Image (cartoon, rainbow over all chains, first blue to last red; front, top):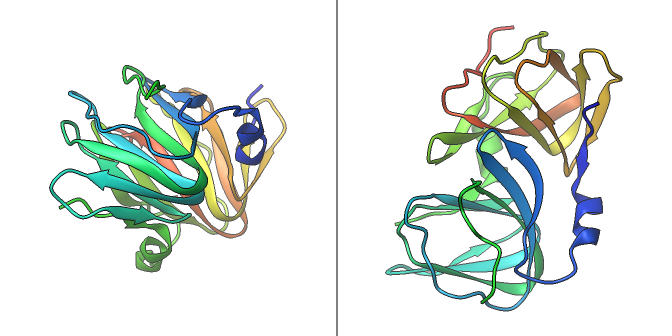
Length: 109
Length: 109
């Protein structure tokens, strides 16, 4: 029995920021949803691109060697592998992450 | 220079239903956005799971051997490979598709 995934319900399961919750697996990829609250840390992924999509709220993605990107609801950005980046929230925000299952995005800061 | 992707702008580029527009590539995956208007056709994908996420509108995903799923905005469903399914719209709707780049979802009906 295939069931739908309701983001409004999923976000209620999130108890703390920067701890993505897996909501779907697509072959060897996962979609996760996370609460962004405050600032994460600068990092990069050696082998994986990563996509951020703002479901609710407003965030900034800081990216090395370019101006910050402000993402509103309904906006996304693809961060290519090996690009240093650091997300932070303008307000507490729920963000979908689309990434290879090999990528460890759950996070201590 | 990494730029953000604004779904409100992307949907303006879509001229006809069931013709997904690629908006991001993540390693060997793509995110596409499509206008669902009317009914597609029953089909399955042999090797690939596929995810549907309703950005705007309201759709039904008909799935073999189970009841239809109605998806509202902010809701998604993962259709595993080899499961027959047939999307249709309740109203003209914009839907994000997450799928392997190998999957041909653009579509004659």
